[in-house]
Image: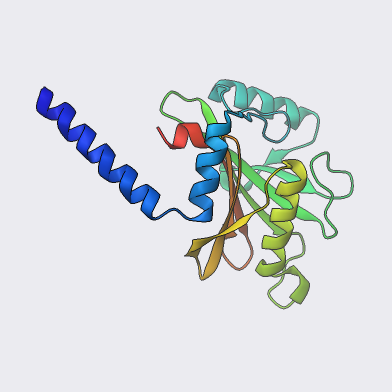
Length: 194
């Protein structure tokens, strides 16, 4: 038993040493924001991190009855159109927002996985390509969730940078999913770091 505690302490020491020696702006920001103790639970459409999966489905059902959302492709996402009358965000070019909850093993909502794309997207329409969409997605997240700006991480997905925004316990990441879609994730850092 004492050996296990010693081993855990030694591993923790090495992990701390490794973490602090490789500290990037992102790592420092995460540490600073977690230490602030600020907790943000709000998501879109009054959904909240910490609610049950059952409540998430009930809330989505009510949103569907109000015609704010509908079923997304293959029943894997909830769909909302971002346009001039959207209660979430009003882009210059109409967009499709697909989202679904991220749940832990206890079926508690710990975040949202979202994909956005421009409606009318075509590979030949220059202004509707992934570079513009990534910028629009980050602009949308910064408007909905004010606070820190996005940072460029030293990681890539599909030859494009991963961008991250951290405010308190809330991590928002954005990256190009493919030629048409940008993926955005909102996650609770407290759940992720456990």
